[in-house]
Image 1: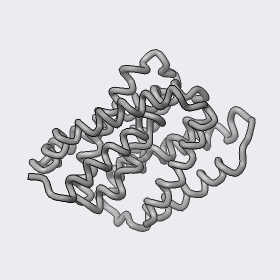
Image 2 (image 1 turned 30 degrees about the vertical axis):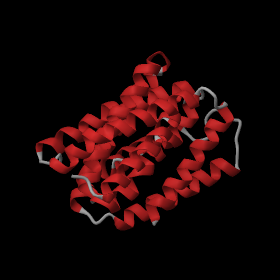
Image 3 (image 1 turned 45 degrees about the vertical axis):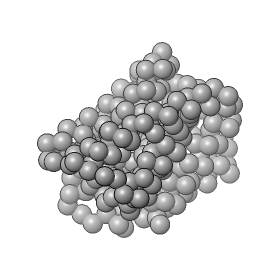
Image 4 (image 1 turned 180 degrees about the horizontal axis):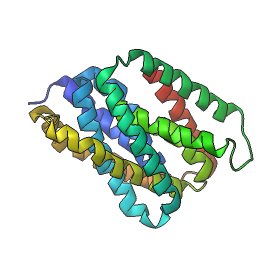
Length: 240
């Protein structure tokens, strides 16, 4: 039987996956901080990683032709390397200070993107962009929410909103297996998580369906502004 905290989790899943369908990345970023406080870190990681794979797969199926395969392969390779390091850090070090530092960094990046606009195709050198991808993998390996850093890279190289959504969504589908398999083998999917996952699919599908319809009515400029505002929000939520 579900309690009030579980009901709130379902509401969070609906709202987060509506935004996930619009941007291709925001679902876990928005839902992870409050879900951790409601059901705990380990259960939140297992639930939201599985949910992210389901909702991202829906985006991939509807936008498969828009995937940028060259960038996908580059991002995937860097993310896996970073996630290996992130998983090790999560199991060996206290993460509160790291999460605060991560939040501050994301806030700075989001404010820079919102306030200072550049017309250059690439604002950062290639080596630094690779470091961003590796860092995104590290954060994803620790918190299953490396999307903010990935977006910093993706907004520079994936200019079309449909290409952005489909390519980033495929990253979450594929990297998700890297986290899901160890979680399943170590008992991360207990009866509570499985129950939340089964019922949670309903608000996820509804939110994703509505978001997919809305994205077609949003201009590229509004789309990017939403992306940067979500970055700012995720940074704030990481700190508090």
